[in-house]
Every structure is written in C-alpha cells, then in structure tokens.
Image 1 (tube, one colour):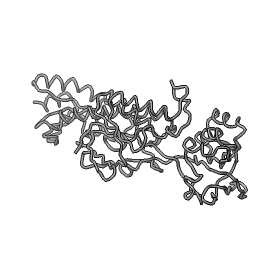
Image 2: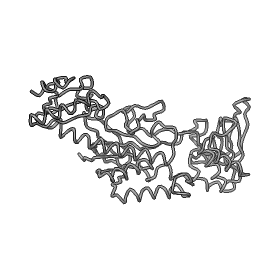
Image 3: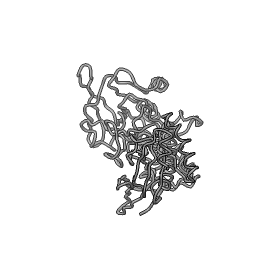
Image 4: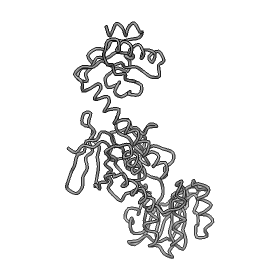
Length: 400
C-alpha cells in the first residue's frame, strides 16, 4: 500500500494553499483532484477582492495557485473519486480512476473538496439543464448573445453573475423571493446601475417551460400567490451551495446540510483528519478565507504528524518507558515538573514530559485524562502502572 505523510483532497484555493504550506513545512504531500485545479474560481469571471491582486479572472488566479504549488514540487494526481476510511488507527484514502482502485495510507488528511451550486428543484429544471438552464455564467453566458435571460437568487453570486451576463444578454432579470438583495452594497450598486438589469422582487420560479430549450418561466409572487410568465432564453441558478463532503460523509461530525465542523486548527472530530475551505461550516465562503483555512489546516497537520511521530518513538515503541503526564493549564501540575526533572536527574533516568492538555487525544486514548498528574509506566504502548503524584513527596516515592 502506498504511504504518504499528508494527503489533500481537492485542489481549489484551500487545497492549493494547504499544499504550499505543507511542502514548505517539509511534508511529503499528495494533492488529489478530480477536475481542473482551481475549483469553483474557474467559473468566476472576475476577482477584485483578493489582496495583492487588484483584478484577475478566476481561471487566472487558479493557474497562479497551481504554479505556486508546483514551485514547491507538490505532486498533483487526477482521480475520479476519493473516499476516506478508518481501519483501526490507520487513515486510508481509497481512490478510483477508471477501472483502477488505489489505496493510500496517510499520516494526516485535509479535506478541501469545496461545494457546488444547489439546484432549484422546480418542474422542468432537470430536463433543461444544458438546454438553457445553467449554473455557470462564465461557462455559458456567451451562448445568449442579444437574448433575454434570468438569474435566480439574491446573494453576491447571483448579483455579480447577473452583472457579468449583461456583457452578452440584451436583458437580465434577477428573480429574488424577497424585496431586496442580500449581496454586498458595492455589488448591488454596480448591478443596479446597469440598465440591462431588471429585478423581479418577491417571486419564485414555479416551472421552466420550453420545447427542448428554455422558452418561458412560470413565476409565483410569494406575497399575492399570483402566477405570471417571463419569456427568456436561459435561466442561471444561484440559490446557495451544497458541500461536497462525500469522501468523509458519516465519518466526521457535520452540521445540518453536511457542512463539516472544525475547530480553530481546522481539525475535524476525527484525529488526524482536517478540513478547509467551502466544505466547512463557516460564515464567509471566499477565495481568501479558503486560502487561509488551507494554510491553518496544513500547519495543524504538520504539528499533528510531528507530534504523533514524537509520541510514537517516545511512548509507544519502547519496550518500557516511564513518562510524566500533566496539564499545562493547571498551575499546581506545572510546578511538579521541576520535582520530576530533579528526581529523574538524581536517579540517572530520562522521563518524557507529556502535556496532556496539548496532547489530549493521546491522553484520552491511554485513558489518563482524569488521572493527571501521573508518572505512567508504559510497556510497548500499553499502560502498566499509573501512580498519581499530587505532591513532590509522591514523585520521590514513585521513582524510589
């Protein structure tokens, strides 16, 4: 089985950032991607809010990230699918490409799989996807030269993509269920200053009609219940996102909808598995926040890998070892450190000092959380003796 230190699933801004930071930290990094590197920014026409890049297209930023990752010799592998499995203490990434299946044992994993645009779910939507129903203005906008189109949604993406579509369409209706947009003020002002944009307030799409291609939208006014027709050649859906959490679904804790829950170090509920970017539960999904998440996750993974290596060689692999477990946030326990060090020096032995607060998962695994402070004797990683040491005299007695 192939073995790697850090496997990153997803090569959008979060995954690329994680790869860059992981490689700079000296880790053996494998980056897995099932599409074009860059993620959703490849379908973004314009990026103006990434510090240091006053203006660039999404694909341009994606390519910059790609080249930056390659600069640090990141291995990028294209796969059709990835799935994370736990086999005992081992973390396995199972990949598929065509008929070939590969298994990779990873010291740590970063899930940076992003999210995708949600479907509206109305009648006629599914059968018209690719025939006038689109989720990507950059991809399909040019097909609607001098035609009237609609955008569904009221957030930043809907308003910004609506403005982009005015480059091609003769008129862009932005259909929103409320009576005002939820987008940033700058985005709203930019869009509403364009005479081609027409907002349709308090309305939802009930049905999409057309003979093979989109020809008409049946709209419902949410306040009056009145139905009306809107003749358009295309409709672009921007009504929120769904996380691409398939590779760890049911394995890590997530909130309703599948958004992965992480702490400030981007750690999930499973030891050694991190998550970054749009797949996480968060308030703001932007290129800059995804890149930030990736950097934090990579440094967290690096610390975890180094910590596990240290703990393995110090505690789990020796035939016999006595270690002092304490909590660095308990002042009384910290004061015992000097007594332990002095006693060990007097006896001519080396006693590893393990901060059970910082190494909480290892401490929990050894069932020592409630027993600190303690001088613990381990034999081949198995706890043999746990004498409590509340006072300096206890230390002297335990090491006698």
